[in-house]
Amino acid sequence: MKRLVAALAGLTAACALVPAATAATPAVVNGGGRGFAEGRTFSQFGFNVTRSADGSVQGHFNCLMAGSSQFPGFTLMAVRGEVTRASIGASAASFDGVGMFLAPGVFDKSAATFHVEVTAGGPGVGTLHLTLLTPFVFDLPIEHVLNGQISIH
Image 1 (spheres, rainbow, N blue to C red):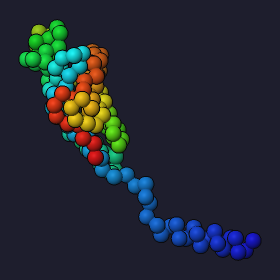
Image 2: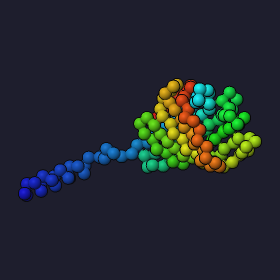
Image 3: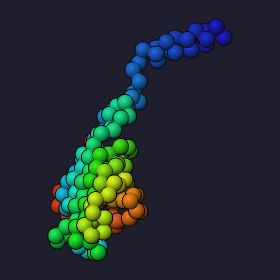
Image 4: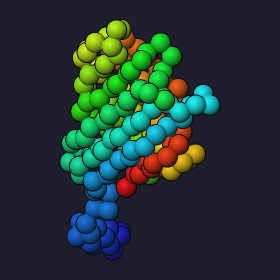
């Protein structure tokens, strides 16, 4: 029994000297380009989000639907703001933010909150899903990257 206790004590001491392999590392998700959904060009988007090793998050998001990518009922629609929370995995990420929503003639300029889910990849592979949470809930279709890239590292 004394040998078992001594062996366990030695193993415990040795493990204390090994650095933790599970320490959080910085993670980044960024992308930009043009998306398509429902068989047509949809939005122009750009974002850069960093989650630091300590869990803090910084970043920005911008999504514009205008010109050839007008959303029915709007001549122009934009959502942009600062990212406040993020979950970043190996091939997918989601993030939330606060900023503004612009839709002339409907909401000239309103404070907004939003949620975004993305998957990594280039044309036909990467996806972006934007949900406007305020000033009203507006769940947009999932867009596939038409041109551009979404990267997670």
